[in-house]
Figure 1 (cartoon, rainbow, N blue to C red):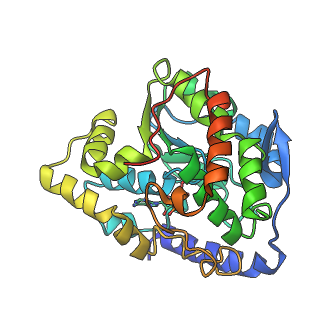
Figure 2 (figure 1 turned 180 degrees about the horizontal axis):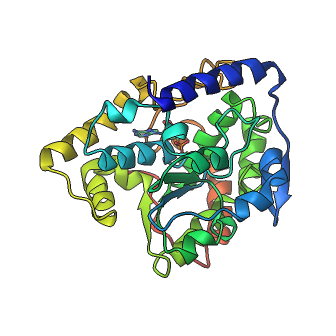
Length: 311
Ligand code: A3P
């Protein structure tokens, strides 16, 4: 059994043991951004993290397609070898920088300390909270953005099922919390804009979830080129197939089934829920949609980002 598999078992056991005491953790603002209390309490060590120049950062607002992108990158780094990419669950293969125990995901800094670069590091931190070492070391970074309405719908379902996130409350009120930037990791509007304005200066590959859905092969190729990798056409096709929604939903190393049911309650809403563009139509009433759009125009008027709510 590989070291990572052993670790994975011990993580599952630890989470199972801890799960009766796992509750919906409060959020505490860090420089005005609400973050899970354990992140806020360990902020100094997160901010001080020094990546290796070869490390890759995958940054997203929660529920924008992080896991999908992590899987694509892992497969590209392993030349499409499905077995190699089933060596451990996503957050063990690709640590979540700021997460801290007792959150149900293994602590990012602990894992990173034990891993050799190049590492694929996930973060939900807004641009201004990313440890400066990433930019000082000129690390590559991929940002994935998803249109606000689908992102919000996905986050709502996630907050219903993830028993460590703040209580989402009713849908109507949740929309307002999103608009006011009160959800964990803060304002979606500031998040997508923050990386957008820095993308050229910092050489950030800025991707859209909708483009990935529309033409996954084209986007996987863009990622490949950005990473200075080259895989055969056949491997490219395999990666597209292995990272389809259906295949990832069935992949126990990508679908977060390693987190026990009381913590990630997948019977309430599966982690791999729908994977579609435009699902917001099934949730927003016409009035809610109009109110949201009006506010969106105001919040996004300074910077135009070509989001699509439909493909
Ligand atoms: P839905 O809730 O809309 O289904 P993250 O990984 O950032 O938490 O994002 C999770 C969202 O991405 C979920 O959206 C999930 O279903 C979707 N997703 C994950 N893998 C996907 C894939 N291979 N193709 C399309 N969507 C995917």
